[in-house]
Image 1: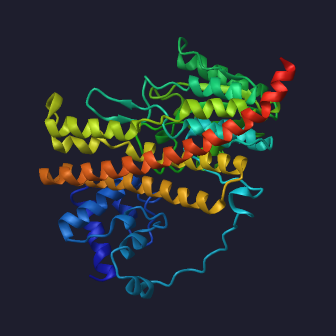
Image 2 (image 1 turned 120 degrees about the vertical axis):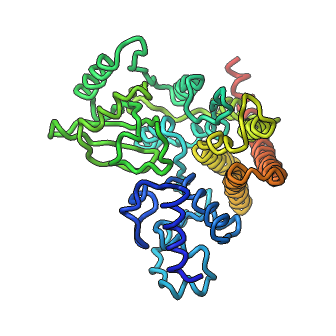
Image 3 (image 1 turned 135 degrees about the horizontal axis):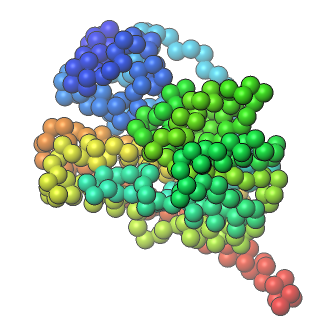
Length: 437
């Protein structure tokens, strides 16, 4: 098939089995996310329908390509490399800044995978304080599973309180909840307005809003609802606020009324404020205690949950069918991306213990492979759900086993490096503590 043929097939898949509602924007140059409102799950659905309806298949590694922006980019994935290159020459690549000395250089690798954590870390970075330890809590951060055996990244059972308390211990500054769940929405919005009116330059006011109701902001997951923390600030124009969204690396003006509408949605409730002027660097002993708390060495909770959800659908519990597995794993991409937080764990320990940069790069590759396998699991499960072919259960199970091995090896090496580092600084501190004793 030519590139034009594949673009036509993509259009047929979107308009036909997917019944996509934004086809008026479809063209070869249409951006998948911003113009067509296609999130990562819908793009997986396109891959699946192109395979089942048109016999177009790609390798696992292609499915997670990060450089796919437009419809034409997506079509090129199905062309031989030479044909894709002839179809449209690649633009000149911009130089990529390298970290001097790798993980031991002056710059930190930066990862954004959790909105609550990213807002607080934005304050740390503005103070020049190492924010990486606070990301240790992300790789196995709590999530929910509904009564219908659906994976939930946001759930009433999931609290940010442990993050808040650990932040206060690590960086020795208060993070104060301002949202009162016993009060009405209007009362809480009044509190938000008062905080913003009185906000000092070094203060951050975090508010949870439903990003689905703020279309001005790119929502790459396109969840509905999509609870998300960001930080508004008033401007000289009373009708416009300046918004800082550290997790998505975005900041800019948005109409005040649109922000408040997203805050007022019944799907969201929460808010905190802090003063970054009070933040202090974390002590090694507190960092060690936090990492030891976060590193669940004997199991991988997300993969365990995926096995449980798969089993529930395969066995038909609670009147579930295989087709329900699509909704059961709908939010997996939001949780899978959290595994990149392992890079902060390795980066911190590798720099603190002065371990080899080449090995650090190896484990970054393994973390990437873990994320890729989680995406492959999602695709394989969607294929099982759509076809109902029970022979595919073995493929999903095999991929779960592979992801389990990836994550266990990552945890094992990180744990060994952490144990050696923490033993070293504790031994060094022993004489001083004895003298103080």
